Amino acid sequence: MKQGERKIVLRCAVYTRVSTDSGLEQDFNSLDNQREASDAYIKSQAHEGWKLVRERYDDGGFSGGSMERPALQKLLDDVQARRIDVIVVYKVDRLSLADFAKLVELFDAHAVSFISVTQAFNTTTSMGRLTLNMLLSFAQFEREITGERIRDKVAASKRKGIWMGGAVPLGYRVENRALHVVESEAEFVRALYRRYLELGSVVRLKVALDAENVRSPSRMSRSGRTTGGVLISRGHLYWILSNPIYVGRLRHKGQIHDGLHPGIVDVEIWERVQQRLASQTQPRRVSQPDDHSFLVGKLYDDRGNRMGASHASKGGRHWRYYASRAALSGRWKEAGSVVRIPAPEIENSIANAVGAHLAARANAIGGCHIDRGGGRGDCAIAQHESGRMRRYLPSENDVRNAIDRATVSATGIEIVLAESMVVEGQDLVLTLPWTRASSRPRREIIQGVGKAQRPLRAMRTKARDGFVRALRDARRWLDELLIDPAQTIESLAMR
Image 1 (cartoon, one colour):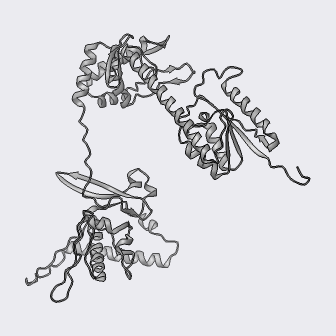
Image 2 (spheres, one colour; image 1 turned 90 degrees about the horizontal axis):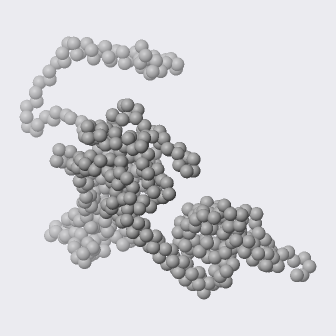
């Protein structure tokens, strides 16, 4: 090294991962093995300026198929903060089995190199990327094969009646990987079945249990965590009443198999409960796509939220609306000034404006071809003998093809037209004055044309006196507000 030259220091981070937490309690586990090999590799590159950072990035018991790993997220945050120059792993699959291409893009964007101790490659070249993708493809294949093998084992065990783990159902405890009855909890479950048959409804059962302050039995897990001791939710009641595990059976993938564990509830009672539940279950309606709301995907409120199709029905009548997605998802503060608007009203306003534009466009280009999406061409205007133009009424397809975006606010509608629908000299944006119609229209008596005007009827004496008193008080209160600055409407209202 020439005198005066400064050696470049490359900050190196070691990332380690194991899929299960089995064996992590050992003095020298798999994470320690990965770190030791990576540390040795970094020391071998000390002449290149490599230096190990103090921060540890160890994920014990996390699958490589998910990016939701605390140490990995901390590593990515440090990459984005430019605290790391080189990432060292024992093997490629320790870092990620999914979304690896996105990780490489992130590393490249922040000038971070990626090194595997046991697999020599360079991520800065196309051949290195190909090698990485091939290795990850085989790792993903192995992972999927392992998953299929595990699922087949679980299915075979369920068919033999073996409980394969999961949340321990109320009324049982686990011993030697088998379910055993807890009599105190089992009696609680039997009481729920009996009371359901007496009351005949899960809703009524829930109300009765809450009124009596009945709470689920408290339980302690192996880790020392206490659960239960709370009011039973309606969903939990449905789960208990419909679970075949309480008659010594196991459910798996829609099929029920005889289990090796003892039942808690009598089979006859359980079947009666299932019949009652089935009779009370309402068939779920299959939602039909709304083919009439043709502005879906084009209409937005004035805060940039997409307005989706909505509807309401009552007494055989059907109303269509466009509603802000922010309001539909409960984010009312993020919604624009117009939360909901009747569909026919906004559709007619936009269709009329687009029709006028298409007519002017056809007149400007001296032709009349409009793409309806089906390969047909139709005239936007027709020439009369007098030389006047007839207005074109566009179809729903015409409107969708003609506009790129429409924004509705409390005072107007802004329509951004598709560039293909605008000729030279025409505006790309159409602005329409618009205000929401009142939900309570004003009712007036209109005198018919040509009919004799009826004589005005004098106001009744009592009503006139009340009106005069109200007018007198109003003028007096107005004078008080103008003369005395300390006077307020609230103080007047308190009199």
